[in-house]
Amino acid sequence: MQNDLKIYNTLHRRKEVFEPINTPHVGMYVCGPTVYGDAHLGHSRPAITFDIVFRYLQELGYKVRYVRNITDVGHLENDADSGEDKIAKKARLEQVEPMEIVQYYSDRYHYDMDLLNIKKPSIEPRASGHIIEQIEMVKKILDSGYAYERNGSVYFNVGAYAEKFPYGELSGRKYEELIENTRELAGQEEKLNSADFALWKKAAPEHIMRWTSPWSEGFPGWHMECSAMSKKYLGNRFDIHGGGMDLMFPHHESEIAQSKAANKGEEPVKYWMHNNMITINGQKMGKSLGNFITLQELFSGNNKILEKAYSPMNIRFFILQAHYRSPLDFSNEALQAAEKGLDKLMAAAELLTKLKPQEKSGFDVDHWIAKCYEAMNDDFNTPILIAHLFEAVRVVNSVNARLETISAHDLEKLQAKFKLFVFDILGLETESENNEQSALLDGVMNTIIELRQQAKHRKDWPTADLIRNELTKLNISLKDTKEGTEWFVDK
Ligand code: ZN
Image (cartoon, rainbow, N blue to C red; front, side, top):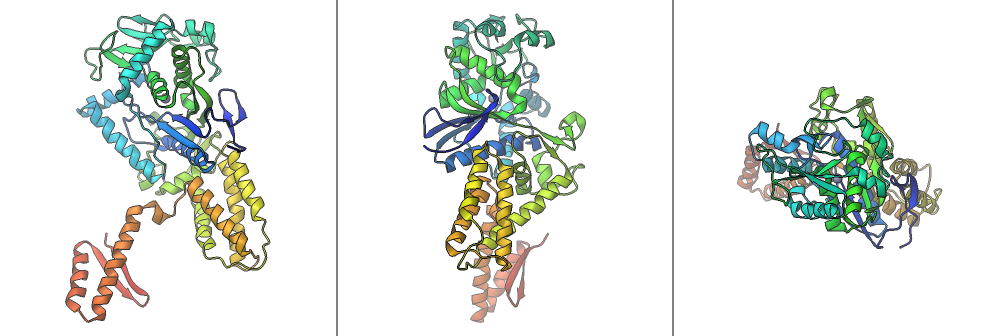
């Protein structure tokens, strides 16, 4: 497969030509959410970033197997390695089963992702469904000598590993500095070393989520699931591993160490990709800082930080206006500016379908198409692509105002590629497409209105009245105008 795609590989800190291990197949693994609360603004960025990667690789002709996990066990409160399990804690507070928490918040996560028009991954495995695979991998790491057992728990021996392998190769941390800087947390005295991390934890008597293992009744450490599940679905070595920058350490660094220790030193991932974070009015987002915004609050406007509600496409476009490796600051002004830009883009998309061609073109469409691909090939540079799309918007408006002309052949090309980049690759939607249900309702209502028109036409007043009365019961009112009949939902 021929292409010019370059990806910034976080592991090597440089852009590299993308050459999959087994062309045309691409294996991609992205760390998904820990489902103990509603998805927030921070969840939208990795979801959208890797949705773009998924969509663009498919546009280039690759067959992508995209795995995005759901963490439903083992993610502990303190540095993910000690304290209470986040999901078990929520279950205790709400007095329900942990899996009720997992189901509830997974469903809500999926609902939010659908609104943002994120394509579903090929496989969405859950950690709790892969306990056997995780136990098998822990056994392998123990056999190879890079882990030890203490009182029913198993820990990764970072010191032993660092003697053989470049520990810290992804995050740039040094093992020696790590030991000096890692604070000792209560309940961690079982570890040989503060830098070691849990592969398996013996469950305390009150701990609800527990499974039998050769070492104890317990549960896997958080990092284990991604090593075990990526291996199961993508193999020992696969193409792309993604996630937020905040996961580089300790999560991804630990994944590399575990996978190499279990698979005879084989580097698990060819290209590591990390998206940057979203700040809110210049500050890191956090519950304790009082600037925490869930996606549902953004869509409804129901949060004191928000001046108004912002549509899912508004959020999506706002995120795509920055390169995924750049920091992005949220503010009402920035979102409102994005909204205006998106409206212009969508108005041009609509207008483009109605333009009339002329004899000649004053616009080099082929050069424009090449520049659009060039932007995406340069490490998925969506802000540059969007700048090119606005160049096309200018042309569309100018042709519409008869200040410029475009030939039929060029117009056809422009229409096809504008649609490709805006809707298929950037994944933007018009508001009606955005809500399939409302599009469906529109269709049904048009049929009902047509039936009523026909009844009136043949002076069948009982049927016409029946239709109007039945709709009134559903709070739908009709208004007859010269142009036809309009319908409203009464609030
Ligand atoms: Zn992960």
